[in-house]
Length: 237
Ligand SMILES: O=C(CO)[C@H](O)[C@H](O)COP(=O)(O)O
Image 1 (cartoon, protein in one colour):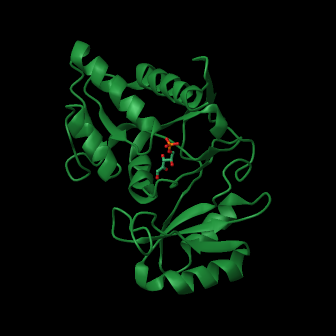
Image 2 (cartoon, helix red, strand yellow):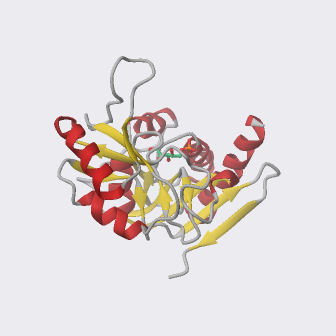
């Protein structure tokens, strides 16, 4: 089963890289397990084609990947405009809206996606849902300022219902600390939501720094199957 899922990730990653990466681009590199296969493919092509890419990381992990695979590391100060970004997702709905942040890197991921002319998502087919919350049951990740986590939890519960849970670390006592030194709250919800309205509410709570809702940001999503087939979904508007 694990191998089948990995095969789907590989297929999606390779297809997205081969269809979209061109010489001389500034490329945003996402975070998670699927992006590893995209970086491997970029490195493979780079050896043969000398792509001359500048890669902008979305996390500590992405920066390490860029180093490990011998790619050129850039940043938003020298490359504030990105040609394309590729990233994974925790769930993708019918309109290619995403929940991201399962790996805790949502804030830099969202900044990089917002600076990119084109944003591509790669995932195995399990992530392809009609409605957010169908398969991803861990809630919407939200990055919060540590001193405000308790009032933020209370306000989210009051304004949206559901359950706003502080994400705890597994190999450290206490909460998960993001790459930016903040905490994460996972907003567990039930049923279909008006995601634009939810995003507005969350962004208006003082102490919320960013949410893992990526709405109307993705151009194309690639979903890989265990047999190597890739379903490609392009945003309608
Ligand atoms: O948003 C993310 C990290 O913050 C990841 O992109 C998301 O969790 C998908 O990860 P994976 O490729 O391991 O399924």
